[in-house]
Length: 235
Image 1 (cartoon, rainbow, N blue to C red):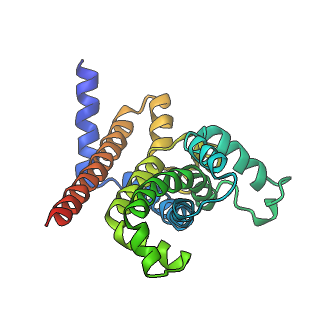
Image 2 (image 1 turned 180 degrees about the vertical axis):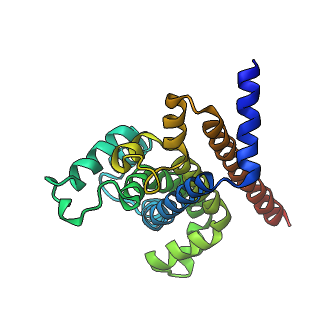
Image 3 (image 1 turned 30 degrees about the vertical axis):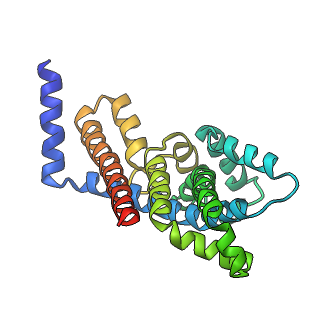
């Protein structure tokens, strides 16, 4: 019990003192996950919007595939990215394996389907509500998509935050394509796994506390945005 108490004491001491290695790992984690979230939203939101307003043969199958991709195994995504970026892979000439860029690519592949599927549901509900009005205004499909994204911006922001929460907590894919290299590709989740296996509980606990704080902060922001959107809707 004393060992665990000491580990927690040292963990909070690391956080309070602003340990340089700790800050470096946290900042890299945020850079990778925020970049992946931005790219995933740039891809997923238009795809979700087009699926929401379009009716075409095979749409049901496309939705099934999209929903299934929300559960992509991270280690499988990591393996596929590794095979493409490895020296013998089709993109090996880029030299991106074991870099933050490869980690961003892996996280983007993981969360883009989540963003697309969730945004599709949000925008489809809005489209059903405003379809007659859009038709009366003779809006093009692109104009309809823009109007839907703007009207559903608060809900879509929560979708983006959900994607970020998924990205920042990911470990399997970034471990494979990043290699968990100190001062280069070591992020919070991979560092926690490594330090726990080494028995360095203070650093692992310090990173765990920060990761948990980020997760709680993201959920708090999501809840706040939802409440603000509801108040504006009823105003």
